[in-house]
Image (cartoon, rainbow, N blue to C red):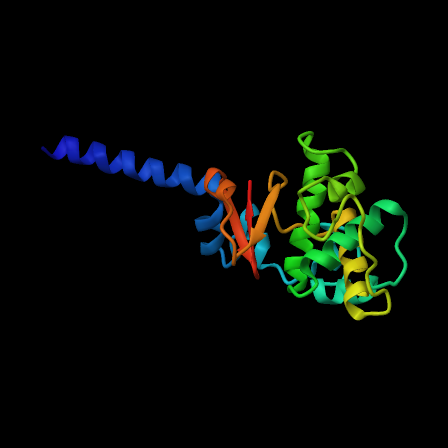
Length: 201
């Protein structure tokens, strides 16, 4: 009885000694030194750093909020036909929505053009028959270019095209207003709702 207990005690003592040699923590603590503190990789989320300092998800120095980004990018003039068509989609489809809701509408247009299931340019996507109610026979009406709503729409279109901010998955290709219930909505997977629009993939 004593021999097995003595053997077990020796095995435990040997294991503790081996662990202290490998880890170094307990021995260093006995010597009055603090054991090194390791930070796991997933703890970086607690770091006190701004995205603009890290240069992640867009340009370094990018405004921290969507509102600030839109204010910085607001413009009355678009940079080419593709941005023009996208800004019109944002303006006519979502100018009464939050900036997030406007950005989500822009992303759907971009997603369609990249999907291979719709035309390959933004203007073709926007002008496609029976897709956007503001387009009549392929003609986009003229927006009020002196309005703040237009300036915001241009900014949202520019931000969406840059890819600096994303709200929806890339396979989100459809949306409708929450006050209608199209039959096709029952056949699709709902991505989420932003403001008055419900999005699907």
